[in-house]
Image 1 (cartoon, rainbow, N blue to C red):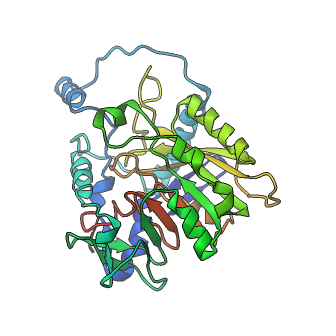
Image 2: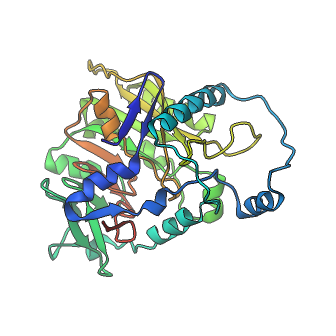
Image 3: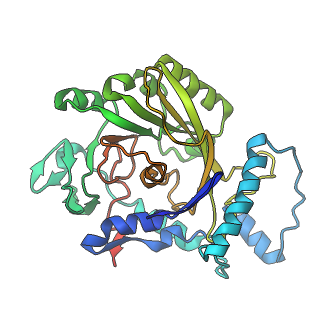
Length: 351
């Protein structure tokens, strides 16, 4: 199981182990270089300057930490201690500014995302493709690239709103919804990789596609206004927020990927908000505040799968759904414009 350790405040996850377990039956493993995050994230220019000086002599302006940052700094210390005791975190002499990981990520993103009319499964064109529960499957896109599908996974290339028609036609209601919207941020704007229209979320009829006892989970940015808007959205959907967790991104040595004490600096954690319908009588046995730590995949904005962590808390789901998906999960419906972006031969290699 990819959940390596759990205690009252935090958990340690191994995403690489999770994917390797899934594709073991077909002799595939996830490219290990994607997780060679041996040092903190920084621009090459800063890395070279520090390397040249031997140590960083940058005068940093100290600022008062937020309540979250102070709390997470304490958690990070516990994560590092436990991980080292387990032998999971190890010192590394490879100081290349995570070059191997970044190159592997660039390779992973070189897959060509076809339109639905060019996607073949056993020679059949399909808008929704489902893999057998027995073992992982393989499909080909229009460029003869192999795409590896987890067992029981169902996916659709298209707008997330398409799931409403799918739910109605197939009489399927989802008991877990995990959404990772491409929220607007400056780095994304510079790269011009995607645009986010929040009206897409507002137009989603979440209540009509979910069971009364469904758990609704949204990844959000660290901007306070995004969290407040998301809470208002839940209210409009007649839902209540029951928990807010943090994902702490750490290096192979157990250090946060960014410092927590720099003003206007990127943070080493992201937030995820849990909600349920007000009419639901189901009690979810999860902490209101919690941190889960893992070595992140080098691909920008990729999030770790949480199904096994939910199972640790005794929560099982019959019909999970992932919105804005960029990868696939076992026994899960996934929908987005790039649901198999990270399922190609560039990501999963022979063992």
